Length: 561
Image 1 (spheres, helix red, strand yellow):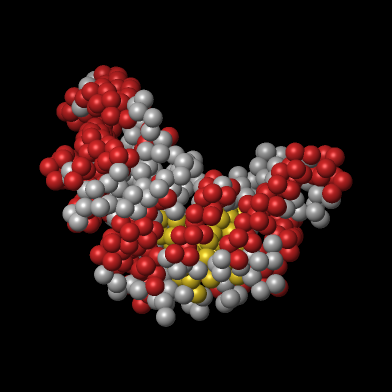
Image 2 (cartoon, rainbow, N blue to C red):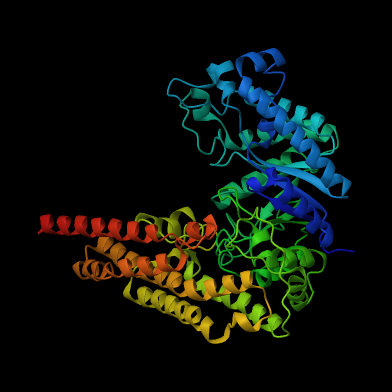
């Protein structure tokens, strides 16, 4: 019997609308004994149903002809895909954020928009609308196993968590009541036809996390909680999610990212299997019964684990879901048996997976995946804090400390953690040493990674040479950015002229770094995601922004004198 009963492959990007990719995911799920597939699209329900109660056929056709045609298209595609998935013996789930609505709704019900232009999240209309569209979706797609929802997050179209409506009702509305009403409106139509509702704890604070659990518990103990492997988002350096094991009688599914939103987006190879194994073992002991393995990201096109060395993480996750105590060497071997894939090609371009012929390939590629995590941990994080913009280097100074200590702060779950990145001289030297080690490891790849000796095809050789050539300069840029950011931060906070000049002295280096990076990646015919992760223009924008910040601080200092 498998350790985790429910083992799901999640498609989060536009690949779900690509029949080739969907068929590839089905075949993978069957090969590695997964139990289902998730289509994660915020408005997937609104794409496939109008609903008819609010947009009768003649109104829809005559007033909103374009949307009328679009919903038909999505309806037929989803019906076809669901049949393929369920005929393969797999479950099918959708994942959404609510509240979402079609823009045409505001034309039919203009009273939902208040005088200040905000859409009111506490209007009772929403619960009727939400329940009706879930009822119609479940009726239209009866083979659906369930719906996964992020309820009322900042990424929803309407949310009490990000509310700007100033009506009297909103001013006094209890947020816990609001969550209960939203969850109830979704649970009722699904439960009536035997479908599951899974509620995510996607949140920015610890209080919000537990509020979602309490709201779900208050509605029904049939609801399942979906909890990310760490609080807030997929950061491998963060502590375990404290919500796991604290959901009462609710079942718990754990979400993992296998592609790398915060560890290279598959452009650079990286194993997080070792991290997954430890967390899966601990969460199993805390009663978790399911895993969700994300394979891509909604904001990027033409990329996923399926055109990346990081498909290893998906393979390992699937195998660990069955046996958390397995020897990970078996997963590495299964990866090579499946074959290697290059992110330098578009994901929609079919690749024949390359199965290395050399006996030295297994130990060398295993070392590459593990060593790459050591490099990226010290590059994309600063003493465990997030120091990247979805694997991108920064393009402006403000984001450096904002991301580390505000937007992606550890402090909610690791009190006072941000003290470790305060710009004291002691901290700055520790942060530089961390980056120096990453630079050393990155340039050290050339000493032992010999693509020609691995028995791989020309495409994979090309990719491995790309990794060797670009990894060092990529790491150097992050090293330079933390030095600049730390000294600028100190100059701002302490009005320290020496720190300001130390920051200024780092700026000329960015021109050469951007030039070297451009030589490595530009005009090479690589996929769009390579430039997304390694765009040299971002380096130059960061340089210019910091020059302006230095100039402003010098002007302020002169005025103070």
